Length: 153
Image (tube, rainbow, N blue to C red):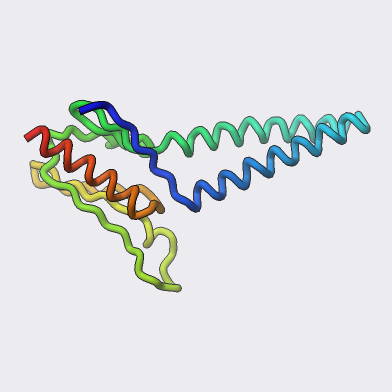
């Protein structure tokens, strides 16, 4: 099978990052206009601060867009995790998914996170929380893992 990358993006995360990026760009345009009209020290400092904020916004957006699952020939890697994020298909016995989508006003965001539950061949169960994702994203990831597990058997 071909190498594949499936991006894990929460609609909420995408909206928040997008709004923040637009706000930073708006402030930069405002700062540049003020700098052209009145080049004082405080305006220069403000413009420099907004330029730094733009660099940070670009790095944050890049980081958010780099989270996902990288499917390689013999293993998969969850790129948004710090450690224990690489799993060989030969070691996985089965995959399940869990996503709570029942209506409730008392549940918080942690209770709504999507989970991929891998049962390994040595009996261990690994639960990977991939955040607030859509059902279709979760299903695509689970289907891809299942297809690659079946291919290895």
